[in-house]
Image 1 (tube, one colour):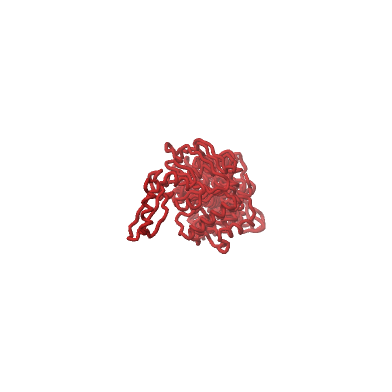
Image 2: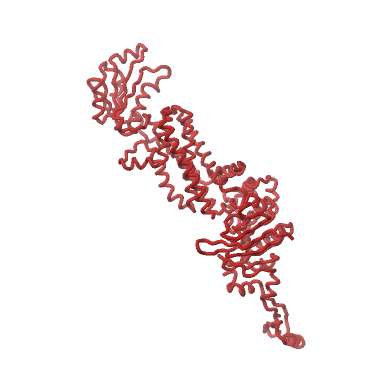
Length: 283
Length: 355
């Protein structure tokens, strides 16, 4: 499958600080690609370079087949961006926000109702955005980014600060986009979200990519396979599956009838992240 | 540059400025000031004027002047005496009235009335004196002028090169500049800074709109509001315009300059608080050359020559007086060059921030 995003040795320095340090990766078309890191790790700087908002200090990036700096005119109609701040015109209604965006992109007004319907805001289209909840604003941002039917969408922390139900709705929406063939470049603080949505994730720490693979491969490569056993007396045991003799131990517990529950307990993505970067993602 | 994109910005901002009470207040300020000036400025009836007259025929005109409570009339013994006394005295003006003035008017002739204006006196007083004389002899007569007025300026070196204007002509440049300053140097930077503050500029920079189109859209908003309010002011004061093409040209160039200054401020500052803090100073500097009664120390007077709006005001006064001199075009060249510099500085500042 062709690559939607190709990054080669991309760096960005602010004064003497290297915010993004020689990162290279590729994202396949139609993939949901997770870009995970702490605050200040270089996620937003990377997105800003990939969307043509910021000039890289060195390196190259091609997005949707366009050089991000040399072919901005061609690139911009091919991408949609949902930034981490809810950058909507709050004194305007949802429909007015989208009408303005449609004029910038040169798409007809017909798409406005479709996009609002896609995110479930059609019935509140004429309300001022000031009256919207955070979740509604987030959905409107997604609608705006989809208005011109982009090939690639960049979502910077799309579920941050949202209640779990709205977060779930947004995740469903992201899955739908992927099914429609749109490539999703996602940054998130929520490891479970990345695990659930992303076909591959990259961990970025201090501007460098420290790991890049599918969530399963990362968990297998960096976690310890084990079984979590709860006994009838309330005691809980963790039995590593790599140990010699672990099979015998499990056999003994089963035959003695002491087991109340038995679960596989593979490493979580969060644990892998901590192992690789030394800090929790939410810190 | 894509006109569809530029007009999309302008349309959004024009509507948005009305919805934003603060911006709407700023836009309407010149209207309030214009109304306030009308109310607060003393009318002809309550002025304190000292006027020198040579009136050998004891005309009705001097009797009328004497009947005005705040009018002090001093009689000069000869026509030369009016001019000579005026050079030394604090009188704002003088009249030399022919002996047969009343009978000539009654006979339908147009006697010559020589009016001296003392340029040493306060600009407003001079302007109001001119207005008093015009009103007395011209404005009240619809068909035919009862007297032929000859204007003579005394102590002309005190006025410099500013053309002789009546009070309304004096105030009109100030009101126009206030309008442009509010729309261009306050509303425009606030619109631009709000895009940064609310991070909507990030969205715009990922859209097909270029930086130049964003700037042009904001500029168009400032121009539209300035033109709208300038149109209203000119429509109300259409009698004051001596040369329409020059006046309109001056106004257009002036609007572009002030809008360019506003864009530069918007590019320079990061939030509305910074704009509000600095806009007061910027507005004062931009408006200072238009204050009609400003009598500053020579050094400050010279400093005003470094403010491009000084040249705008001078050009506009010449245009209102109907004077199309080389001096007018010189002033226009300064304003135009300053506009280009301000636009270039804006693009530079925004590009620098972007990278």
